[in-house]
Image 1 (cartoon, rainbow, N blue to C red):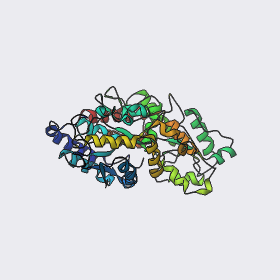
Image 2 (cartoon, rainbow, N blue to C red):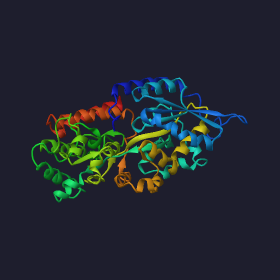
Image 3 (cartoon, rainbow, N blue to C red):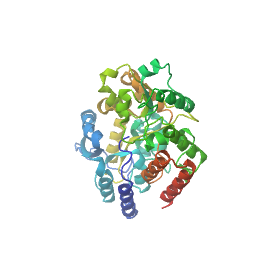
Image 4 (spheres, rainbow, N blue to C red):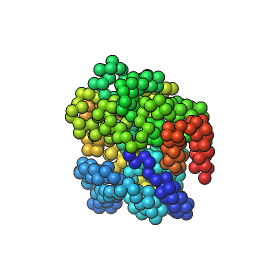
Amino acid sequence: MKKFLKSKVALAAAFLVLTTTLMSACGGQTNSASGSATAGGEQGEQTTLTVWGFGEEGTLLSQMSEGFEKENPDIKLDIQVIPWDVADEKLTAAIAGKTGPDVIQMQTYTLMNYASAGALLPLDDYVEKYPELALDNFFDFGKDLVMYEGQQIGVPWYVDATVLFYRTDIFEEMNLEAPTTWDELKSVAQALTARGEGNYGLGIAPANPVPGYAFVLQSGGDFVVDGKAAANSKEFSDAMAFYQSFFEEGLAPLNSDVDLMQEFIDGSIPMTLQEPWVLNVLSEHPELDGKWATTTLPSNKNNMSYIGGCALVASQFTKNADAAARFIAYMSRPENQVQWHEISKTLPSAKESWNSEVLTENEALTAFGEQLNSGKTAPMVPNFMAMIAEFGAAMEKVTVGGQDPVQVCEELNQSIDKILNG
């Protein structure tokens, strides 16, 4: 996830401004299925629905407009593309001023910041009218992702998961099987590294929180448990120690500047933990066709992956709540999620989408579909990105610095506790 390590300082500042402003603003306008302005307003009028999309996805989103507007002639979409690096700044200003978009693309780990400030419109009243919004349509992790204080604040739109990529040609030469457990992951990595100088067994970076968080989840740990910081648990420190061991034993490159995907392509690192964007990289190397595959993550107590991505939400201050719910429902239909996958190459969040031939006939995607059944999203706590930044620093202490994982996790837990409790 390339956007995972955005500035925690910028996010924290934006959240502070948002919270302060909305304390006085949120007592005003509310929306419900019975009381909001309906799409189209008076007979014959057309509602303009403003949608904020971010980065590349925002640019591509206009390709979904024609189908929606043809089906909903009373609604005109105004899709505005916002760069990711100013996303929080723009959202904070728009929501605090009760202006801006009706529908917002929002990264999953920032949902809690805006939900806790009262900035997002609950969709519960619209589910009966637009059944595509029902959370039963999505993978189980979606229920954790978009529920806040018993209310549904959005829907999962597209998702990210981590799976294991491996070079089948090299594995066949060495009579190796794709690992399914932590023990097998270590033994396969040792065998691949033993090929000689310049070779490694596993492509992970010293301070990448995405696979690092997956290891924590697989060990049975998490940043927060029952509302309290939990990074000092044995499960958490065991995961950190396991991650550390790949670098201590020379099974993974300690140099953070190593291009893991180039090394995978060259064959010097024939096994790596990566996200869907890697598929686009490998598609540019036809010489590797038939020489690589994907599989679900190896298991410890479980084989969970961190699930990221984006949700679609409606602003609490929209004057077009019904139209907003209708658009979000449209984007949640399985057939439309498949269309969006073909446009953006992102992974659908609706379970039924994965029955489409577009996905089932792509062998590389099969592992991602299976992995989505075993995944967990960010805990619903404010300022999760600040926790991730601290986690990345802690990972570097144990991998590069060789520090004791138990002591580092104790220090990390204190930092997480401060983030939770201000």
